[in-house]
Length: 291
Image (cartoon, rainbow, N blue to C red; front, side):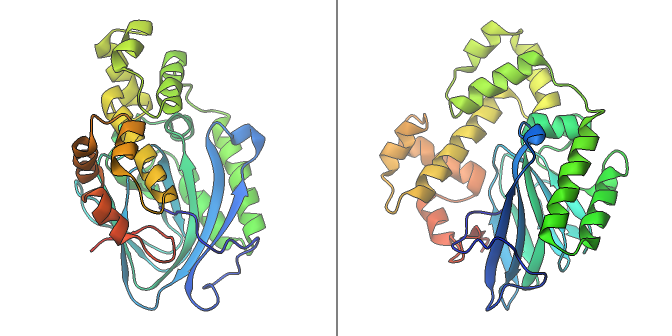
């Protein structure tokens, strides 16, 4: 949900950032958790008016703990959810965007889990979370609800990040173990930005039917859809880094046939063309406007 913002303080005070806008604090995770997630983000935002944000899909499983006002989460393929203060949700891999809405202020913690890391932590088939945002109280076991309560009760970001390190490491101690072949195949896709031919993976591991079944269970999407999502994620990264993107060059770099193919995939995943999405970018760096 979050992108890099111009201001990234070492410590974010409780409440709203001075002068309004978006403030972020980032903390690297414990080395024992690096296969699960790269870092933790704390955030606080004050906009002065209700804000609807278009949340783009990525190859991460998103975990949000809401420490601010109630947060609305609208899924194109499921019902609208209201995440209360002190609540949270997990969003599996998506094949289209979602919309969040706040009343003008928000605060919370965000984790971006690798799909295999989420599979280990949550202990549920990942396709049960695909294209959905699932509230903590609907997950297996009470640990996520208890984690949100502890984060809500902590008074500093140092304390919250320490709680996360301990809670995730403890949850992993009895974690579900992914298949070595799925780990290998997923790493090939990630390293190539989704450009490895799926037929190559099928030849080196299982039959197509079995590979699809295992990917649904442990990643959340079949290999072809996961590869498309990785290509889209790479394209959005390249576009964000370029002042005036060369759309044809972006298309070639990400493995699309041509610029038309790039536009088609953006309309599928982002609900807009690349140029249209660029115009939606919020000035704070905090994502894209929904409307």
